[in-house]
Length: 208
Image (tube, rainbow, N blue to C red; front, side):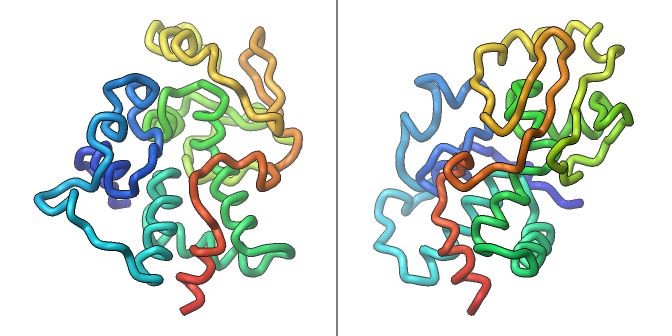
């Protein structure tokens, strides 16, 4: 599966928002948005006002890059969201939020979604007691996530957990820090999803 391998800070600058792609760096004064809050490239500071289509495209790209999802996968998620009851935009964000790599990041078990994706691929986590190494696995309400005992014994993993111990965990996730487990109480409501995007613009983009 193709992945973007360039400088991720350029993605935040292009969207004009923090997408938290660099882990701890995003919370410091070294963040690219704080230092150069304009689009990258020779003409980054002189960009004109975007068209309606451009605004919709930027909303879609922001959400896609925020979660680290490629174009074809994001399109499939939109099709899934359309078939579900309720508002398509909210359904789409809820699907993205329920990805295993995203939840691992939200729990503070990784410093960024990219790191979470890598850790999941390497088989460090279990869902309901069974190893799951697919980052795009869509978790369901009631499922219990845990870190493998062997992984907890590694110094690298201990350092990651310590570095992210103070990160607040969303209310829709119930954690037990002593056992390094977490339960998905329910899938999140819209006001519990922090992605900086207006989802109705994404719906308008795909509806053209």
